Image (tube, rainbow, N blue to C red; front, side, top):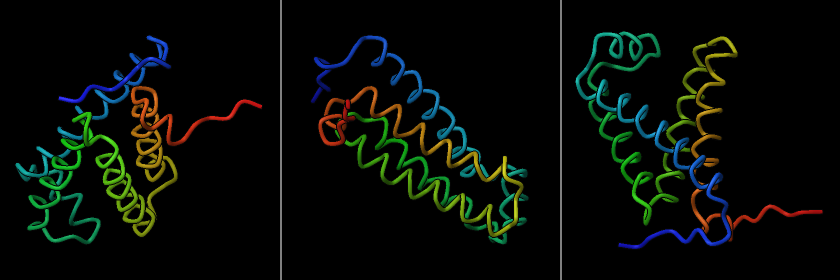
Length: 134
């Protein structure tokens, strides 16, 4: 098993990234499981967005798969990319439904947190996208 190097990272940043990522993973697992279980609130929300009820299970399995990739250190960057696409679709659906600003900003903030959590806990990403000090 490959482990992430944390030589250039403070313990505080590492643990902050882990906490952010853990909270996101737990929320996304909850989201995926409720879709797979076809909870009534999920089916009603999909109907309001114009989606048929039979898409709940495939959507739930998709978000669970992307979340699994994000949670595994070796595939976390791929998982973050896929979750970004997933959350972009959520923004699109909410804008199309004319949701108020606080609601459609939620997946945008969530996407930022996906990358922030990963950036704080993964040296590979910080090496690929370094922050410049001027």
